[in-house]
Length: 86
Image 1 (cartoon, rainbow, N blue to C red):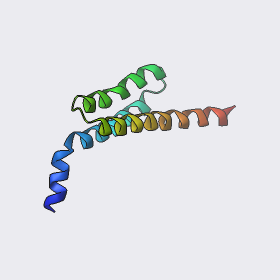
Image 2: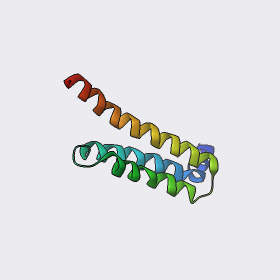
Image 3: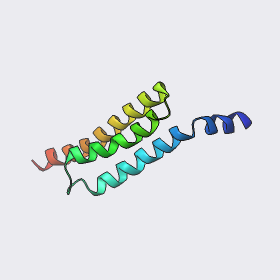
């Protein structure tokens, strides 16, 4: 139990960035119709910048890849819905 707690304390910023990515995805879903993809993509950069300030390259790449995955997931659902309408 102590090792898990130490791991969480050591990588606290990583978990915060993952939670913020989930929140950005949920909020981005609500504003997909009213904003362009470039504006939503710029918001996805925020967790990457926060992780990069800590200086851990592996964590930065992890969050950057997950940021791209969440962005593509968010807009692929929209693209599939548009294709079904057409």
